[in-house]
Length: 361
Image 1 (tube, one colour):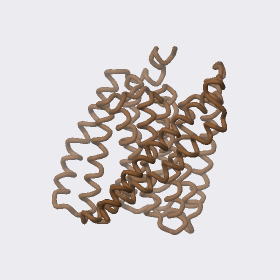
Image 2 (cartoon, helix red, strand yellow):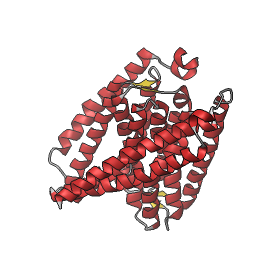
Image 3 (cartoon, rainbow, N blue to C red):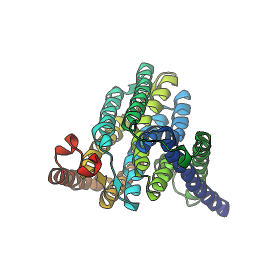
Image 4 (tube, rainbow, N blue to C red):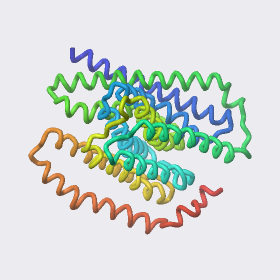
């Protein structure tokens, strides 16, 4: 029994890597072929594709009236995308951040996260809210594509080096299919192993299942970073967050019989954490327009602390009050102070007005 689970784990991991390789290769070549920047391809096509598991899970849950699962999946995936996907990618290789992300996408992510929190503050994201959110992702996609074409209008597309569009499309579709299947196998195998080790369902849900729908983003961004396609790596993470809040939440709320009911604990704790993560990423992105290895490590450590709190709260662990006091009184203020000092000393507000010389050229 256990050996078959480990075999499933291994097969799922292999499919993730192969699928990510196909997706990144196809997306980067498609960007060259159609005259679109890799960043925009990462923010739209790749990001929307890797968010397919979140879309499937949340829409199905919304339609079945399981609002808690849908909302938890959306919020948890966004926290995971910024802290783990970007964090692990940056730990492998420092990520250069395009000025467009600092000026447009990350502030937009902060604004959309705030709007989502406001919509959820009354405990319900209604069907009308869902329609408005879905319209938002359509508007953003049109804006991003037009911006990408404008920025690349002066460039020359060499179809001989990028290959036919059909071939790149097949690579992308095949990659997405392998990513979704690999994530499903990996989550199934990991859940089986955890249960064999007598880990509680609560802990399994908060860790393995919550991270499982974001595995395509992890694999894709890491492979993109290793291959030097850093725009795709960063764009995938940020674009996936925008897609989750606008399209996934919007469609789930639109199909839910009574809209998405937001659990009180999510509105009080997880939604503020999601917004704080988005806001905290802004100074990290703005300092030198890059994400250094140590900043990636800080992201991953922050997610580990967040998961530790969730597990302690779910299991009513006796050390939870002490852990909460240490996090609230020492770790969080120190992290915020470090980000603020680092931002002011390195670039300050000038980072929003004028990009570094290496990016202007």
